[in-house]
Image 1: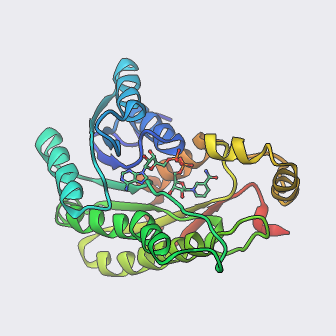
Image 2 (image 1 turned 90 degrees about the horizontal axis):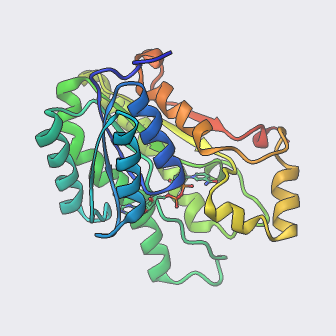
Length: 255
Ligand SMILES: NC(=O)c1ccc[n+]([C@@H]2O[C@H](COP(=O)([O-])OP(=O)(O)OC[C@H]3O[C@@H](n4cnc5c(N)ncnc54)[C@H](O)[C@@H]3O)[C@@H](O)[C@H]2O)c1
């Protein structure tokens, strides 16, 4: 298949990261004009993603610095998309930064920071893009996590699980509010995906045997395997899908 996103303008956040980069490459390959962003002014990863997409013949611009926990930066990203490509059809809220700690160790500041960097950034950017999504009868894809609906004894994820459960709830509400404008909204809940972070954690034998032992397919997921689901949700192939969370976990939730 090709051109599944022909003439679509897609904002993808966190394009310096593993899943964001895979999504930028996949969306551009399917004909999308992609707008990415990097957290820091010299975000080499975000710049490299945009260069790789363009080198492959795709269309992509990227905004650095862009701290999505600040409403003003979210507005700047939306403005860049509209000024460069004239519209916004898809918003893939992929970026997030989780802060892990057990209940008895988490500070007020850490709790607040996790909310800002996992929940507020989705709200701020969606609110800024909403008028353009109404015009285009567009699509929102939000990144949740399997951890929103399951607890793992190896993960001190009180703030993270709370935040990602909030993303699933926010997505359902967006689907309800968006229906009258022809806007669809869905979320994705990945299990354990092979990224720099998880590769590091896998060096811990207790973590590795527990998490991999819970995965039916017996391996980590790849960023491309999450990006493919985002691509489906962004495209017209999912025209009758809204208000749901799709789990991409290699069968972790089964046992
Ligand atoms: N890797 C996994 O196993 C896994 C599992 C479940 C959910 N997820 C979710 O998938 C998404 C992508 O994660 P990843 O594994 O690719 O991680 P990653 O760390 O490689 O990418 C995260 C990206 O988000 C960006 N980001 C974070 N906070 C930001 C902010 N305030 N402003 C701008 N950019 C910001 C980072 O710069 C980075 O580019 C996240 O929402 C994460 O919670 C990942």
